[in-house]
Image (tube, rainbow, N blue to C red; front, side, top):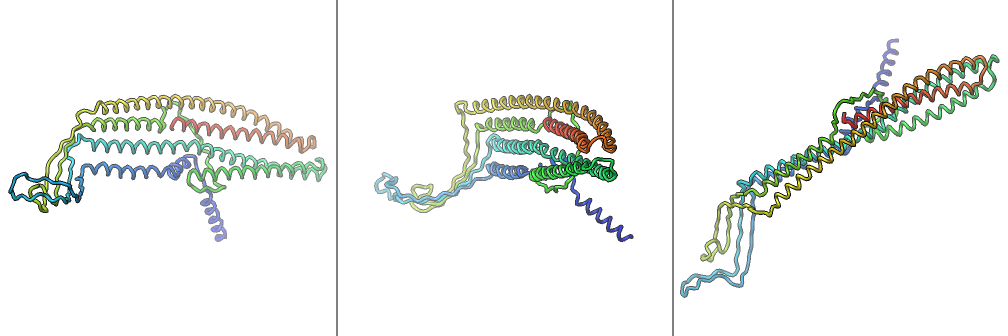
Length: 416
């Protein structure tokens, strides 16, 4: 006895473990992590790090090596008779190694690094926006699965009711209370019901497979989708990631403005060059020599025909354009919210009337059940009333799922 109990507990535990369950929020979270686009955020981070290292290298000493060999048709000669100064060779050779060190550039390097940081934030936020838009797609898959799940339960309940009624009718026929062949009508209805169950199961499986590919998580056809009550917060402000993206675009423009403003700042560089060649720096010494030069160099673009100013004005116009895009987005989003709110109120009214209709249908079916038992009506008449009740119950389930979908869409539009 004890061994049998242990086996039963083991089987029950195994069934519970293998039974997969998932919620709408889990689907959102899984898509954010597993969808292929999500990988871009990390790739953008690595790319930006490399670009910033390239920019930072401007602060490091810059080395360059040059070598050349030339032959000249003529060379400099000292026009002094009997000076015994040997003229230069027409074939000349030189190899130099130069080092340039940036000392000051008005903070342009740091400004360039700020631009790279702003660009990274903008690109990563764009990825977040694209992933956020997946939520609408998930809604269009998750709630139809819920509907199929609830419809399946209704069909099973109707099937059980028909099977129970078939047993009663078979017994009634046996004792001559109910007309012969009444059971055939019920059997035919059960066969039709079985077809409906197959269709619902097939549709659900197809939806689950599509949803599984979106969230990057394998889902069983028997997985339980939780019908969690969705609540809406109508008094909160818009919290869409697109609004943050617009602001980050403006921040990026401002960092570009700061960079452009520093591009005309004076640049001070230190340099040193060492070399070996013939001739060297002493042009009168016609031999291979080592040489070097060190110094500082100032570069300042004093006048650029207002190009720098016009670039900043152009960027300022871009900020105004982004402001108009932000206002347009808010207007369109609020319009969508109003439409979705009207949809919610309409479905809620439908549900109220659905409940009233179902109560009336149940009274009619109760009367038909009594009449069938007493042989007053046929099985066909009973099935008609049962089907009417089922269809109205199915309509109620559909409206409840539509209400949940409308609320979920409302929250996504608002950014909750």
